[in-house]
Image (cartoon, rainbow, N blue to C red; front, top):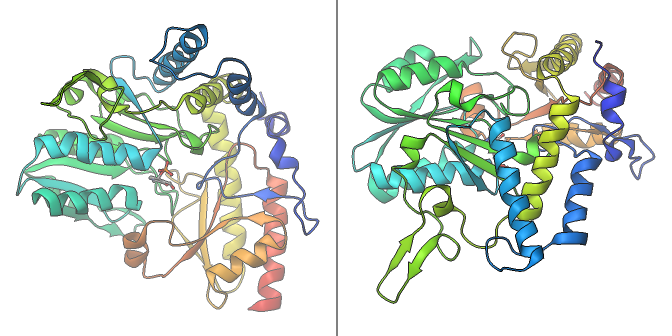
Length: 409
Ligand code: PLP
């Protein structure tokens, strides 16, 4: 069956938006956060209207309903990610999930001189926690270089860096370039060196159906808001044996069996990591998003649709004088991102000029400064495509971009 993008778009009210300048919104900032289908907004609104109460605490009807919804969402979402033999810990997003690996696992299992490997391609969420942990406990942090020529991770350097490492942490898909790393190969390299492996799948999960148990990674960080879910929710998927090695990170109520003035006993499993009032509305919204994706999106067809748009856009942009494309949108490992720069129009100015035509893109360093340094640029413009974008939007974008270059270059 053909990919029915209009049917998909009809679920997203915001895509109808007319901006204050009278322009129709074209939303190409999906790698920052995706829009939400109406079912997600309705599910959250229904919770607040009809059964909102604090989960895992009281014995009244609303509290029971809220608890059941929170835990039901966990079951549904972890099944969606193929994590039936693993645990899912709710977090505020992918950043918190990466910090949970650093402070809930590495802090308890690594000591001075132990090696953590990350890469130059990472979002800061997979760099800064390791630098901070290095200050705390003296781990050695190794960076695998980005091969700017080949526009992909230097796997030969990874083979070397992984020797003697305790943990290898890598991004699934680059948020700047849209290049999908060969995560299967990364997992193999890490495990053959006896290291645990953590994936930052913030940009992978919106584009492919993750099968966490099948992949074999030890940890996987996911952001709900980048895959049609609400903001303020994400998760860390953890293999059972890695979970058994973890200790508390953020502490307080809800994660304990007893607290005395002498000390605290903690709950086991994922319950040890979700302190304070749970993210109930957000979990309910994320469940609705996951169910919506299951009912409406075939990930294979969606990927093809997104890939066609992104590679066509990058081909057309390459014909515009002064524009450089980064990453490899047309390659098989290209996942819906066109990162570009014009030689004489600053990225930030380009952002404003595109916005004047209704086009929402991201400009700047994309929280990935080491990658930009490896690429030799201070910033880029990033158009990121998702399931509801159309070829007509891409065509309009190219017309507007040509016009900007003609007028301002
Ligand atoms: N990792 C990657 C690759 C990302 O692209 C992002 C967000 O842009 C994050 C981590 C942080 O995710 P969150 O906003 O859910 O904390």
